[in-house]
Length: 111
Image (cartoon, rainbow, N blue to C red):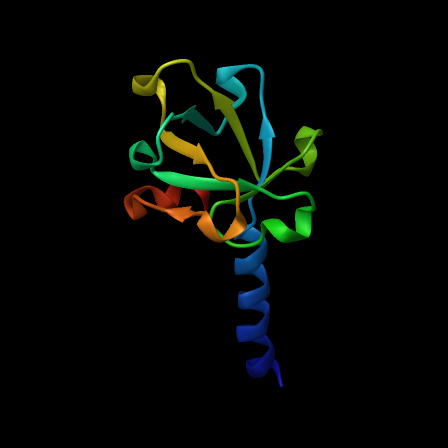
C-alpha cells in the first residue's frame, strides 16, 4: 500500500511545484526572476497567456495567473525596462492555445 502511494504523492507534489502563480514585484531585489516583455513573438523565450483563475495556471506551459498578494505566489517577477537585464523574455498572447516555450533551455527558471 505504501509503495502505491509514493508515485501518487510524487505526482501531486510535482504539479504543485510547477504551477505558475505569479506576483509582480515593485523591487528587483525581491524578485526570483527578471522579465522583459518583447514586442514580437519570435523574440520571446516564452509565450504567456494570462488566466483568470489560479487553478488554470497548472504546469509549466506559459499559463500565468497574477496574484495580488506575495504569499500566494510560486514565483516573484520584476519587469525590467531593457532586454539585456532580463532572465526571461516573454510575449503575451491572446489565446490559451498559443502559450508555450520557444526556448526550452530556460524552462528551469519557472520550476
